Length: 106
Image (cartoon, rainbow, N blue to C red; front, side, top):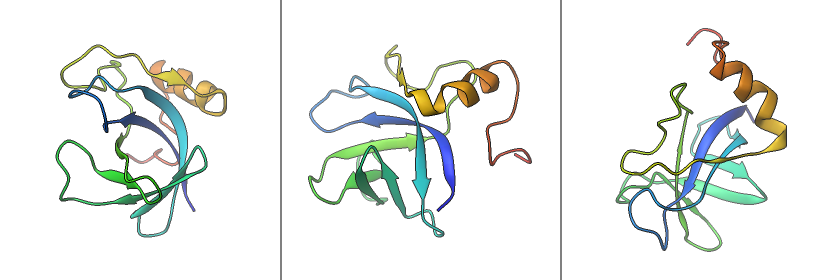
């Protein structure tokens, strides 16, 4: 499974873009339709409003995307994500201008 540093935000139970968020290492399967994150299995689904993955056990909905260098990861709020320890060094290098691991070519 490819591992990527990603922005993850919980959407279920929160108004648009106000749920807790993380910068985390997320593992994806070969087709990028299943993600493993914080012990959860998340499945991609395009029919959700304001989310692109759901937890297969709890049906909680999440938004997963690449982080933005300007830290404007949410559209309608100023929520600041928690940065997981295993993603911190790669994320800080990314903010300083380096590519994220696995994205050296874009």
